[in-house]
Amino acid sequence: MTAAADGNLAEVFADIARQLHEQSTPMDVVERITRAAVDTVEGCDHAALSVIRRHGRIETRGATDEVPHAVDAIQYETGQGPCLGAIDEHEVFQIDDLAADERWPPFSRRAAEETGVRSMLAFRLFVESDTIGALNFYSREVGAFDEHARTVGTILATHAALGIRAVQDKERAEQLDQALASNRVIGMAMGVLMARGRMTEQEAFSVLTRASQHLNRRLRDVASQVIDTGLLPERPQRSAPR
Image (tube, rainbow, N blue to C red):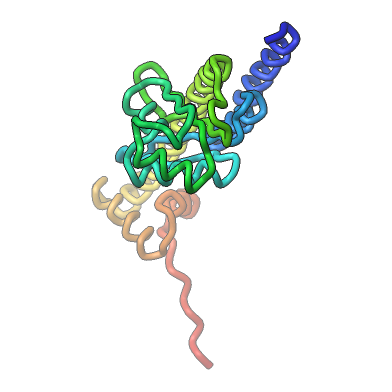
């Protein structure tokens, strides 16, 4: 690779790092990385992430088009393939020709025949020892990915893992702040009810939760009204039929 190309690639990675810092959701991070993969990795026609969800379920996210979904559906159905291998075995997996692959023939043959993809490259996404998923490249050409593609993919996978984790940590912190704020409001409302109705703490909480369920309103909203008015909200009376 020429020095000019190296410089351009460095600019691309710097731009990605800045953009990832500004992304608001994990999905924003995923989509930025997969777009960058197609733009920067020679031979990469499609890209996606395989993300580990609750209970170990794996989902395809941020696919640049429908092809990764089709390929990954075969992986999930057969329980094998480079994306799953990268997640389970913590390695980079490369297939130069799906039609001739001997490692995962039930997956590889079907993927080549049904999707037209011939080459794949998969990288584990992880932070410390925590595996998040895999970054996956797909190509219509045999032997599409060289050592440079592996190097660029490793960098993109690192960006993706750190970006996703940073956004997840931010979301968890915001959720904790919201929960603490809700708890403070509910605690204040319980205090109002305990003072006015001479209730115990448990009785006041039960009154609030029953009102929330009866009115089909959030517990925090009911508590806020109690603080503002000193009274429990009531369900609006229906107008009598004429």
